Length: 90
View (cartoon, helix red, strand yellow):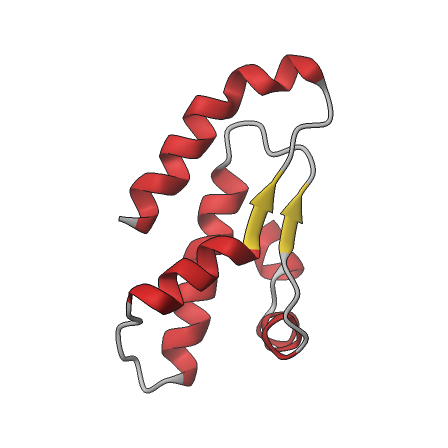
């Protein structure tokens, strides 16, 4: 539900048009980034007759969903976040 509010189709259109990124400043487990990446793919497919995006598009989507850790304690979650996003991308 939160993802639908934050990443509406209109907002995704703007993101693409203005070459913006999705930034999760406290990504923890990385699940918001994984779901944001999946939503970017779905949005692209919707706008491209449900074709499957190629590797360059998928790479572009992965650069549009970024996460950071503000607190040092949260850095211990990095391997889980990175592997979760990596598994979705490949």
